Image 1 (cartoon, rainbow, N blue to C red):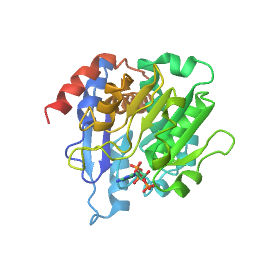
Image 2 (image 1 turned 90 degrees about the horizontal axis):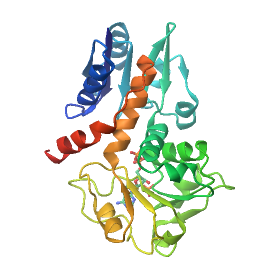
Image 3 (image 1 turned 90 degrees about the vertical axis):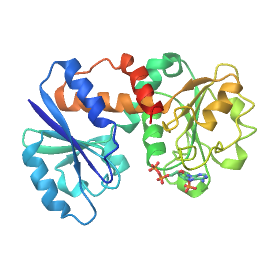
Image 4 (image 1 turned 135 degrees about the vertical axis):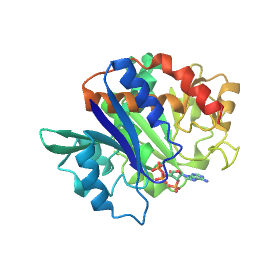
Length: 275
Ligand code: ATR
């Protein structure tokens, strides 16, 4: 019997209860996944103490991915590098923090376009330099992509984590001419989210044949960035798949079971499109 859940604020519209409900069912495991919303006025330490008595593991979302760290006994490598935790598990009496963003992204990519990871000398470009960008950057390098460049509005922010020998850093307005060099282009900023704006963060043109273009925004599913990329003949990777594979990895951390989620993609897409 697994008791799992999510902390964050606000979280009422989270898709995690649906996803983990499906995973529990598919795994044939009895359990539940609850929402433990912690408001900024709550006593955080007290809420975490109570939570630890109720659950064996939990997810962490905004704004507590850093704040949770002093309440944990250990961090895995990714969480340590990122100094951000989104999944916590109790193991042998210790509370361990993970960051599943990078591996979640890489798994979604591998599922849809395995040749990008397995192929030789593929080049990737990450647009953005926030938390998600950092996680994906490390995830791709760890899986053997040899060249991962970064473009960001604020160039210094990208330089803070870029490894000089594997990465060139560009300003957003420099990338127009360069896109034809990449086999994989990933948009990781919030630009393109519903209610923000319907403009791509940068024009998408000059792509090489067969390029995969990916956006981690999943509301809307087809962002303006992906729409332009499709028009240019790119292969697309949608943001909701990262969400699914991150959850798959979190569930594996909690239960030891890796559940096939490929047939959940369409259903999740339908839920998101119905919102
Ligand atoms: P997260 O941790 O969720 O990835 P974040 O740390 O706030 O979010 O990072 C947001 C990213 O989106 C950054 O790369 C940011 O660019 P800056 O580093 O220049 O701030 C980028 N971003 C957000 N709004 C943007 C906009 N309107 N135009 C261009 N980039 C934007």
